[in-house]
Image (cartoon, rainbow, N blue to C red):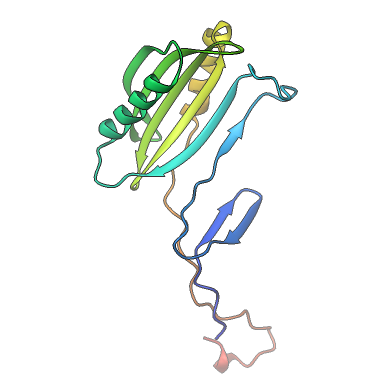
Length: 169
């Protein structure tokens, strides 16, 4: 029997690799319109994930909101609501703040799923807020939160057809 490595495997659409024991996933997924280049004020949609230990979703979200309110110039909370993301309970905030490039609109949705909070952060110039809000909501409606990838198991290598049947498992 061939032993397959027991190290956790990170899998994404276009790559997979083993992750050292004791390391956690801190990946960032970011999307922006094609052709946006390095424009500071282009819309974007970013997904991150954080483990939540012993905190409720509302407590975690409130702490995040408090940090943003303290750290962002001219922070103004516009929306605070409960929503669902892929059947998971979620908290959604919409707010604006002042950046050197102008006033920024952000919609942050935090969904609790299997011990992690998924943070979906949508950002755009305030002048585009009405147009991109619908787009951001469509993206959120398409989210499918899934279970973790199971660790690899010991597997027998495939046997050729000519291999004696009694030796196959």
